[in-house]
Length: 401
Image 1 (cartoon, rainbow, N blue to C red):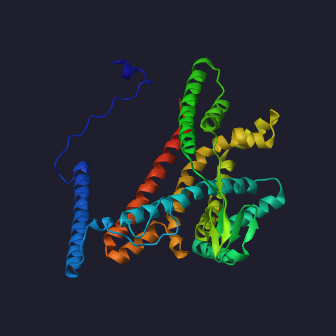
Image 2 (image 1 turned 180 degrees about the vertical axis):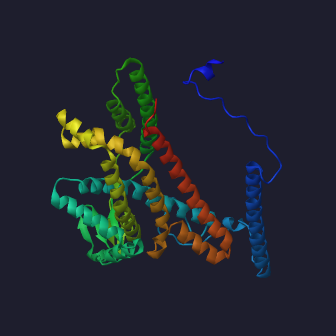
Image 3 (image 1 turned 90 degrees about the vertical axis):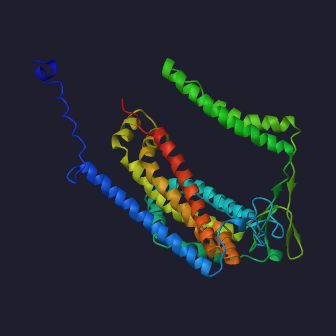
């Protein structure tokens, strides 16, 4: 008798593998046939739709392809993250402006919604009755109002501000129905080098954090990380900027004619879209944060309190790091929703990728290509956000030994 058969601690021998038979009774053959049939149906549907679209376009003498991207656009764009001239710039350049405008509002919205939602979610669990009730009202009210109505509300509210000649003077800035006019930094080569130094500081900080973690695993002593990170990310760029002469100049806005000259403008369309997205999404983020904190066992609070830690320190150092493992997966969905909800910008006149692509297809007649570009842009942005959040989720996940 073998040791495996005599000792019950050893598991039974694995069953012999069944041979693959070319028969409908074999599960593997049946599954393969069903999958092949599904693929064939999808391929046939795509072939039929593509052929039908090609015949309809040919009947209407509409050209297909993306050659129109190299033609002069002639589309005026108010929000210009990069230089753009409607008299000479192509449709490709105009669409790139739309992509950058979408990223500008989406990335800022994700950061601000996370900060606001975290504070509201923590406030819902606060021992202060009034603060927790106000946070609850915020969440329940704003989640039940459609986002489009909130965008229209904020845009209408901003339009009620005074005209430029009666603009509210806020120090060096002006607030009017044309937006917020702020002093702009006069960019010089020293600033570019400082920005590169800041990027290098981030990379070096990540490498130092990894080395500190490895040293802690080997010796039990963790070298300081945050002081080094602050020195690299802040001190290094400041030092580079100072060595290159420390240039610092601002383009201060002034009243001129019926408007302003100089400075940079935060348009009412961008402000309304950003405010609507942040305030609406933060209500959902608050519930995610609240549920993540409540998922941490109560014993963690009690044990930390027994050690003499204050409530704020317990929340920051003990509870939130554990709650992240519950918070991050649903938070990814909210980030994706915020990015896709930014397409409602067309309702208030903000020129994102949807607005500019819609104008492009109206001018060129390339409807299929225009819709395909919009879909591809949102697909790439969504997949990028998902990949980053999945990577971060794997970083904070518990590792079972």
